[in-house]
Amino acid sequence: LLHAQEALQNWLEEHAHDENNPFMKNPNFGKGNPKEKPWIYNRTKWLANLEKNKDKYHFYTNMTDPKFKPYDPKYSGGLNPTTHEKMDLEQLDRIKQGMTGNLTKIKDFLNGLQANEKLPESKEQITMSMGKRFTVVREMTHETSAFTEGLTFGNGKLFESTGLKKQSRVQELDPSTGMVIRKKAMDSNLFGEGLTFVPVENRLYQLTYKARKGFVYSASTFELVKTFDFTSTTNEGWGLTYRAKTHELVMSDGSPYLHFWRVSNPGIESRPKLKITRQNGRPAKNINELEYYKGRILANVWYQDVILVINPDTGEVEREYDFSSLWPKQERRMAGADVLNGIAISESLETLYFTGKNWKKMFEVKLDGMN
Image 1: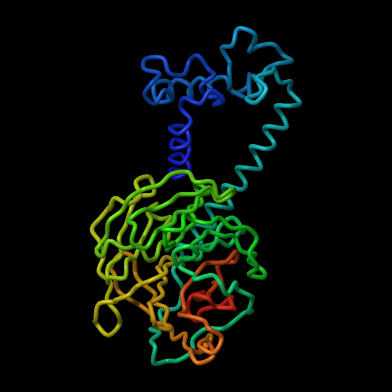
Image 2 (image 1 turned 45 degrees about the horizontal axis):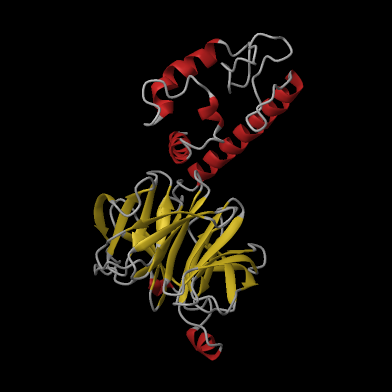
């Protein structure tokens, strides 16, 4: 809920002086200093008044408009925020029902976040030497021209970021077939990299390889919301994921370190970078695509058919899954495909999507010991 409140405040900041913002239509807002965060000055008083009079009205917009009589039995709600006309009780009931439905969605959303924080019951130490420790649930298609750098899932949709200059793009995939639904090309001089979905904002955050620039898009429209600059150990962008528990973006840059940014301040480290150590005690070099899953960070390693399971608090690699049999290298080379890269959760949270650069296949997989 605090994350949702932060998202609301970010929205208000972006639309603070938008004449179509219904909050700004209320003369009570902004008294004192209307140019600086006007909702802050009256927020406590506004909420207290709303609670005190909740039985008299349901919708609190333009209550002080001279054309509005707040205690008129027929118009006990307020003004329509779109048309600014009086609303009768029937309209208000519809709004109330809609709000109730949204609250149900919020509860389901929060339950989903909580489920993705729940650690697996199994404490089994899985290593590369154990061989195949996963099950392919199904195989789907994948666009062979997609040089996959990021894969992420949210709101029932699967999104992908592709790399290479003049070929980089953000696109939505059908999670049941892998087919491309829509795409947005990047500037030809940019090399797209890691991508993650932030549910409280319904936004996609994307890295670039060497430009030290990130992009934020609306997940609904692919409209560019904002850009940000970043630095890291190598000053490159590789993988990106979202950790709901701390409301942080976690990024990799090909080094043995993970970097952490607050969602509200991407590109600026919110805590010291974390060194990742493999099960053999050596630094985890070439950490690539990332996904947050069951309280842990899953990671691809460039040019290795392995999936690392990383403790985001300690940097310890707790498990290493051998993925050499998912689509063997010899078969991939014959098909003109590149390395394994791309991990995303699924709707059920019991399976994950995996693919690679220029792969013609995408797989839905269940990891042993992670359910």
